[in-house]
Each structure stands twice: as structure tokens, then as C-alpha cells.
Image (cartoon, rainbow, N blue to C red; front, side, top):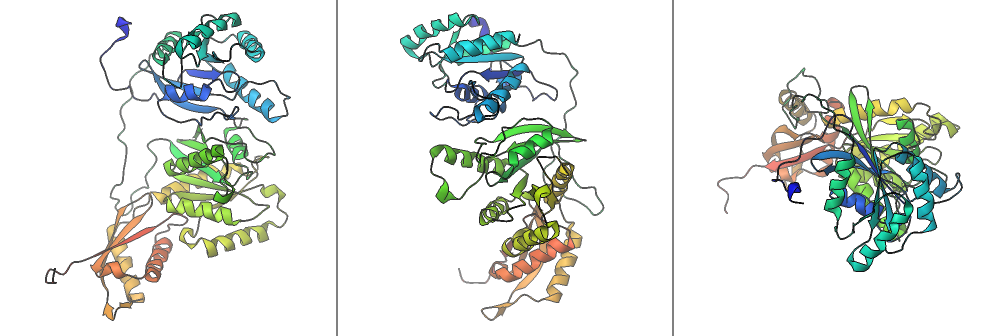
Length: 479
């Protein structure tokens, strides 16, 4: 162990090319998601005592002995009919195993070796993939002794550990690193400085993402979010079916489209709080909201055959409150009979109930058939551009003077508000500050008048606009 002790050094930068793939597999409730969280270094996957919590493949990046790997947590392997839910989950897990550079086959040392462990161990041996046998839940003397039963699976020497308590995880990381394929040699790429908020002069080109454009797919249960993700990827990556609430965790997948890279997160359906009873569903909703907070653009998926429900509006308000750009995705458009009337009814409802996101881009498609699905990512890219927009200061103040001449600020307590100038302090979302005497007393209806003017004049549709005020202090006023 002495040769493994090295001085602490900062982690290497994330590689731009392909990373080796390490897949965690095994029957349900053997601690795969707990081990996944332990290796990636944070609680990224949902963990509960209920078997079958993980349904879709969950991906993360883990740093293993100075080298990054793509770690995949899979659903539990179970014998079931192919058309059933568990059959679809098993098919997804088997697809991940076939693409792996290394498989971590987990068993429960406390429960002992079961017929299911033996069956799937034989299946994994036939896949001709490198396998590392993990005897999880081996804490204490009894667990360590029970781990030796895993020898009977014929997958080599089992590595006893406890993912929940962190025992043996360091040895596991060294074993993983020793079994990975050799790292290819490539030339170092020049560093690119990340762009943050910046001043923009008139006539300059709009900004472009310097990293993956983060997108969260949100909506009510059974709106077609996972089917949309599969359509974008061109493969059956997510578990789909007629059952509502199939997606439990937030699943992130990277997608390349032209010159841009998207990190798309499929989230669990968001229901009314009064209907959220089980602790597992509360965890799913929390993961979905966290994914929305980390996103730059939110794709709100609606079932076009059902129209806009109050819960859809609540989700849209959450998007606006978090300050994210939004694209409205009307799914199942092929099943709509009167498309013109349906579209007008949805837009009218949004304009009345969601005026703060007026002009949100709308994309109609069918995720099941793939019709018009190609329109979504360009709309996301355009929404991101608007979300990052900065208005030149000169044009902004010329507009401000015109708006003041058109409608003077109202009297407040019999005194005139003297608004002097406006400036944009940040983007993502566009945020403006008005300075003037008693500007902090500006009524909300006049603020809405200015926000609508900003949206129309500077072409800022569908993104939240923040308008703040800063009053000037009278130096002669009594303290």
C-alpha cells in the first residue's frame, strides 16, 4: 500500500474525448446506486430501501486514480417478460453492459448468493467483458466472511466492501484503475477562457456556449418527456411506456448537434404537492427541481391533446422564478384534430396566466413518431441566445427617455418620481437597474409597462426580465 501514497495534486481537467465506461450491474437492492454515489463523490443517484428505485441508466463522471471514467448505474437485473416494465429495465441494463470497458458485478454479502445472482453471473460471463466481482454490504466480521461465498459465481476473487460506510472503496478504485484499458496518448489542447457576463457594443455577434448547453426537460407525468429524450438521441435510452411516473431520477445525457453540445436532463414528472405522498416521489421531485436550477434552458413538455392545466402553469412559474429560458414543447401533435384552435387556445391561456414570459417559443412535434423533432434544439439554441442578450447602454437609455416621454411616472404620495437612467447589470436572465430619486417607490404597473417595452423593443421574447430600482439618498435629509 505504501507505493499508492502520493502527494495531493489537483485533479486533471475533464477530457474532451471518449472516457472508459464502467458499468455497475447486479440484481435489485444490492447497493448499486450507493456505490455509484460513493465513486462519483456526491449523492447523484436516488437511494432508498425500496428495491427497484433505479429504472433508467444513470451516468456520472468519476475520478479513478487520476483518470476520469464514465460511470453508469443500471437498473436491477430481473427475470421478466420483455414487454413488462422490469423486462424493459433489464434490456436497458444489458445494453449498458455490452458497451462497458469494465463491469462491476455487485452481490449482497449479507443476503448470500441467490439463484438470480448465479443466473446473471452466467450471462455476464458470456458477454466477454472484463468483470470485477463486488461483495457489497460486507461491513463487520460476518459480512467479510459471507463475501467469500461469491467465489462460487466463477467471476474471480470477490472484493469485499461497504459502499454505505465507505469501507474498501479505496481498494476498489485501485482495482478499477488497474483493469481499465490503456490510456491513449493525445496532444494537449489549448485552454479556452470561459466567458461570463460581458459588455457588448452595438453590432457585435451574440455569445456562443463555451461548454455544454444545459437543458432540463420538465413537465407533468406522462407528458412524453422520456420519449422526447429517446427521439433526440435516436435510441431507446430511457424507459418509456403507458405507465405514468416511470422516470424517478434526473438522467443527464450529452448530445452533439452541429457545432454545439447539449447536456440534456430528463426529469421526473412534477405533480401537485398535495398528491406527493411517498418519500421516494418527494426525492424524485427534489431531483427534478435541482436539475431545473442547474439548467440554462428549460423545455416544458405539454400533452397537446390535453391542453394547458394549472399544474403546467405552476411549472412555468417555477421556471420564471428560477430565471431560466423556456421553450414550450407541444407533444403528441399528430393526435390533435383541430391544430389551429388547439394552438390558439394554449397561447391564449399562457398570455393571460403567464404574462411575465410573453412570447415564449412554441415547438410542435410528435416524440413517438419523430415528426418535427428536429425543430426543438434550434429553438433551444435561440432561447439561450436571448437569455444571454445584453443591450448596449446607449440604445437602452435612448429607449428609456422615449418611454418616459410617452408615459410619465405616476405621482407617489403627491410627489413626482425622477427617474434618471437605466443600465443592464447582468444577463442570464437579462437584468436591468433604474436609478433615480425615490425610484424604489416605482409602482408595479409602471414596472410592467417598462418590462413590456424592453421585451418588444429589444426582442427579448420568452425569457424572464428582472427590473430593479435604486433610489438616490438626499445628503441633507435628517438621519
